[in-house]
Length: 136
Image (cartoon, rainbow, N blue to C red; front, top):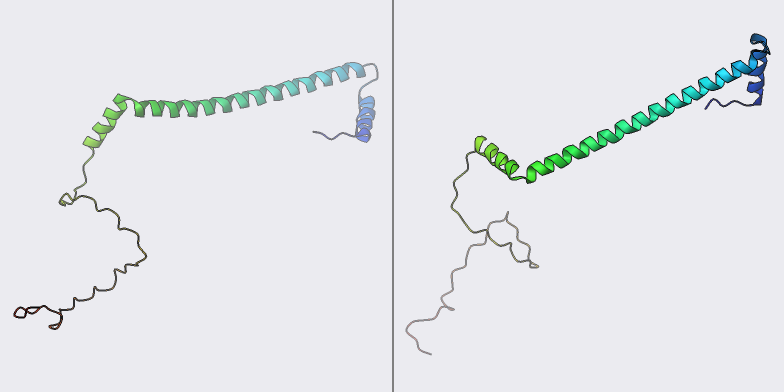
């Protein structure tokens, strides 16, 4: 955290001996230890409160989701949705005759191109048409 090495600790000790007399040094170190302990406890309490708040926020979201699901699945919720649909203005629908849905076309190897016009039917030739007066 603070990255103290031996040189820094010796420097802090020398400065402490200059400003704090040797007879008061043990009590000053005890006081420093208490302050560090209090700071660590405060940091731990803050972390635990933060984690608890996060858990409560997640639980609140889960609880709200469950309440929404419960309302949607209840009869009252269904009736409320129907009432909302009835109150909403209905969009005008184009009147079309009721037709049965067409089944999808069978898959074949043929490719249907809809952009080209269909070929005109060829009239039967007189040679291929059966003649009425002749018997076979």
